[in-house]
Image 1: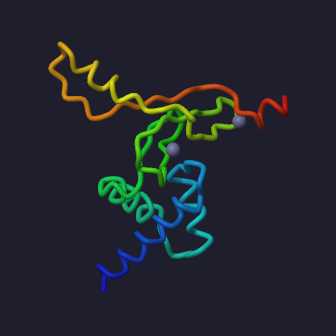
Image 2: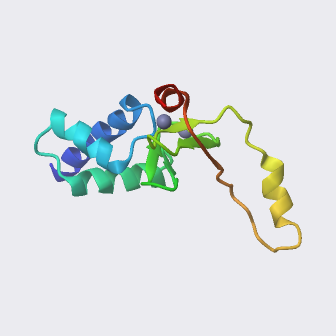
Length: 128
Ligand SMILES: [Zn+2]
Ligand SMILES: [Zn+2]
């Protein structure tokens, strides 16, 4: 029954990443799930996030603050607000040519690149 339980928890974690649309951190996902299932542990949430990211079901994104998770698995760029820390998808096309350009003369086989735009979101601009 252990395997079955793990699958159920993985499903819960996956659903949470879909529900929390704005690139939640592992901690935000944990807090959210804790309200739905008081028995779920931080370790379970973190472990399942890693498995889901490895399986390509979610995207693990590295931004200057905490690591975030994304239900979008296509390649895209992000924008982070330096005031509230929220992470948004950037409406900018992923430039595959840059991956190829980085390979020239370096011997690298580039898989992808990550770009994070930093600035102040429109909500925070309204507040100040
Ligand atoms: Zn903001
Ligand atoms: Zn995203």
